[in-house]
Image 1 (cartoon, rainbow, N blue to C red):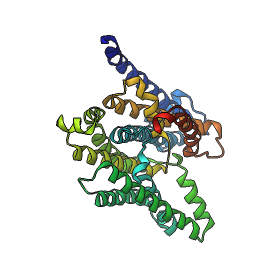
Image 2: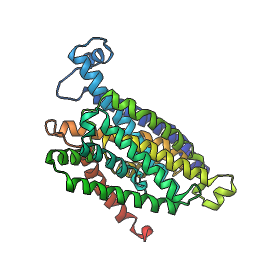
Image 3: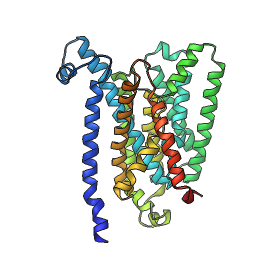
Image 4: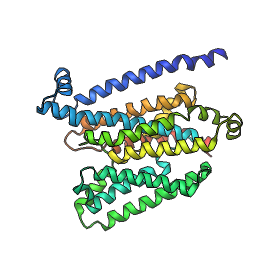
Length: 338
């Protein structure tokens, strides 16, 4: 019995080290992948050069922001997915359950539909971020500060359904087929053509969300024993729910604002890593953040290798990977889900 408890303690640092090294390797690989073939030496020179040469511009303004966003957004989706599954004690929970992604998408769609994104360079991500913020405020207004988990879920579903319906309406009424096509492509999710401006816009909100999400790790450990046990151990469930919802909304909203809707990462990663951390949420949170970064960086590299000239959307690839995994999970856990 002593050995079974000790094993996770020994393996967790090794798991974190392996994930960290893998993320660093894929981050570096992402910097080398693109239409222009660049060696490691030239890539490092372009990355740290102060010149205005094409190589420096490519490395600093195109590839570096893409790699940063891949790691940051992947970590956000993995972390928020682990938090939502721990909070709701539901293995099928994922970040989109709160309706933040759908509302951010609606904000971006309205920016494209009205032409705001064409007038203001950062109009699309700003509008998407505004949509995410409004969704959070609406959910909190519906559920209230003391609202339970079920109330928050129902409010999120309602907001998500409304945002999805309004997005469909905008597509249906779009008089410009090119705008409709741009809307559809954006909703598929992509890291292509992102700049440091997108990084500067999203990262502050993402970091705020991370702080809130990581702060609930110990409370989620106690919550695995039941909400009554957690409350009797001194856990303020209202505070935990508020931090989990606000942290997810802030970080995922910012991620969606700059990259579009990217699904299944927050669902897949916690399931893969949960057995490796002893099913302890406080360990699963940082592991899922690194796992999410690893998965999204790998997916972004894959879309550039598989179809370099077709701009394959990263959200499409994650869905292709995630849907069979979801089906496998349901088939293997159908008895416990009934």
